[in-house]
Image (cartoon, rainbow, N blue to C red; front, side, top):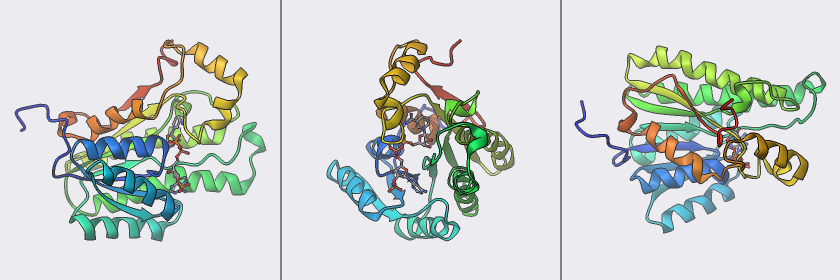
Amino acid sequence: MQSTADIGLHDKTVVVTGASRGIGLAIASAAADAGANVVLASRKQHGVDAAAEEIRSAGGSVLAVAAHMGDGEAVAGLFEKAIAEFGAVDGLVNNAATNPYFGPMLGIEDGAFDKTIEVNVKGPLAAIRHFASQGREGSIVNIASIAGMRAAPLQGVYGMTKAAVISMTQTLAHELGGVGIRVNAVCPGLVETRFAQALIDNEEILEKVNDKSALKRHGQPVEIAGAAVYLLSDASSFMTGQSIVIDGGSTAN
Ligand SMILES: NC(=O)c1ccc[n+]([C@@H]2O[C@H](COP(=O)([O-])OP(=O)(O)OC[C@H]3O[C@@H](n4cnc5c(N)ncnc54)[C@H](OP(=O)(O)O)[C@@H]3O)[C@@H](O)[C@H]2O)c1
């Protein structure tokens, strides 16, 4: 049992998916600042290369891998490369997600439905399977959303996948707790990223969302990163199966 609350990530290797920008890049940068070797994954090699350069120039130890989270072989390759470079993976942040359809839930076409499930649910599950197959302790952080905790008008299937992520977090916490793997989730509210650009650019929606929040504003990616580092670190050693909501108080009602 550790004697201090160590929020550092020294001697740990952390894989972050969807790490070329937005919340994933903020988490990867914060993890590197906390001492971790970080493995950045996203679909486009040039995106993760640029992010890796940013982290490297700040003194971080980093590997950039192109991996589509909807492609099982790519997810396997991501873990192979991470382990070949750093020996083992101690932390996994399942952050990559997609939301190809915006509209009433019943209007979604099969292709968009399947893609949302593949990237947001099957991908994270596959990554966790590779993580667990190492047979060592560690910490997994799934980036869910407040859209998975209540109705998500016009983003229904996306919200459904995030509810699945929260459920997966709880079940896997039980199934993997015995071997020392903790599984937690972070549920952000509206955060200014490319993913949320359509909402941020729509003044009417933005005003409504921000007005509902206790802090009367939306968030920035860096405001999600600290919780992820905490969950990856030994400071959260007694915490598993939980979801931390970071939404400026939007759901505090
Ligand atoms: N922004 C918000 O308001 C908000 C709120 C709640 C939850 N979230 C969650 O936060 C997470 C990060 O979103 P973000 O807002 O930071 O988005 P973002 O800025 O658009 O970044 C998305 C990242 O995921 C990568 N990506 C997209 N599809 C991928 C795939 N199939 N396989 C691998 N990587 C993929 C992108 O790079 P490539 O294009 O190179 O693949 C990029 O690095 C998501 O899980 C999202 O659901 C966001």
